[in-house]
Image (cartoon, rainbow, N blue to C red; front, side, top):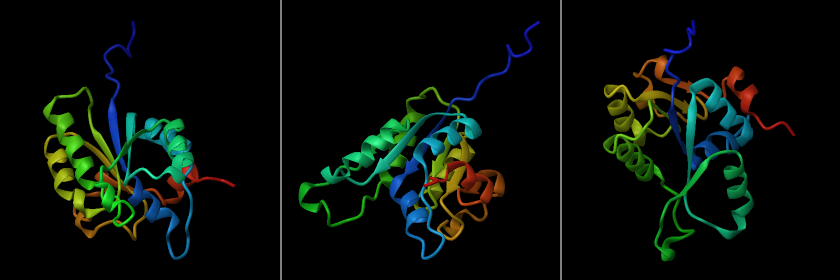
Length: 177
């Protein structure tokens, strides 16, 4: 008898705030570190059963084409924030609304996924996180580090968040030179 027959495999999706991830790992006063994107993608799949991972960035700059290629080759769906051409280079990426919109669109259209993993420590996502928890559609908030995580998430409970810079996680996703 096949006992694995009734076990439903999870089909989770992830939304990565690329700027928040970069700022929370590379631009620390001390203890800066780099994430190996391939290792991060494997970690998201192995630990959180993420089948599709969206990586959001501010805007396209031709001199960053190698970065964009690396993100896609690591298994992420790359999504850029649309800006008026006059504003390029004058403001940060601000992908928050794009992430919230895509998450809500997937819920509304009843896309085939189980839960959402969010990679960011930005408090702007708190209402989305609360709603997803209420709808039983939230898996985990992965903050780049404890220092950069908004205090708004402290009341969530540890089952809903973790830190990428925790030793056991960092060892799995860090870029080794």
